[in-house]
Length: 352
Image (cartoon, rainbow, N blue to C red):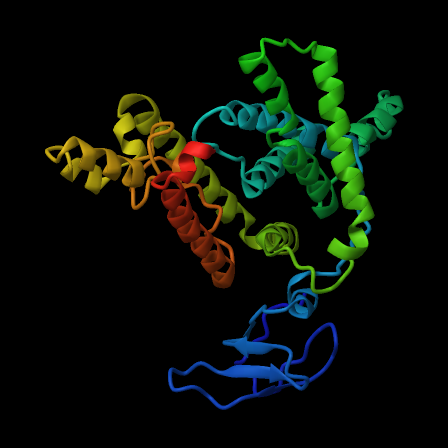
């Protein structure tokens, strides 16, 4: 990855990947200085490249550094499986709630990082028994603790955890059969059916790699924050202690606060000023306002302009996404509000 290019020097910055000179553009009125490459593919503001295309991602964001460390180890697979089980159980429980909650990949990434650092620190390495009577245990200790926890192990453990830490749509089929058709599917049938559908999905992903992975312009922007966190934790370790302290402080604070809206004061889940102001309105007006502005309870309404003080509802999915992608999401939400309202208040609702 090309590190941020300093503009304090008078020399023209050079891309570490292409070695091509980057020429400065005139200074802006606010004091910012922009640089653009000779090919016009990248613009630098205050020494930082503006990531706009897949080529920018490959040149300035994704690091090609390889330390030759191990990737598939017992430690990475074990920790990934543990957090995958916890995340899958949590997501499956929430899958049957009116408001679904997902487990963030960044959250799992940081949990895996903390757990594997503790693993590498407290489980003795094979070097600790060299020259002692326990030297025969060296191969076992090396299998359990291959050494320093590095980026490849971290990525493998996070991939295992994040891939499985989600609800499986196939389970909804068995839930519908049990709920509406009084059909109880045997456990072995449900497990094998769920496993086969998951494998089928992975096979499709593998077959479509020439279309969805290999082209340089196929950039999955939602994954870029995860990539930068990986590289920051393992290639810029000086600030890791401060970063992890901030994460655990925020995690502890949100955990303690979550007790209040979840158990003590559930009204904080969603506050709608419009619903509060319509308490003395006609019943027909109240129903319409509830349908549009209500929505914290199941099947209550669309929840338009409601304010939530519960982290389960707020989440942080869009906080690190590019503004253009957030705008696309907002437009989609706006269209959904309009389309669903039109369908509900028209005769088409009766025929659905």
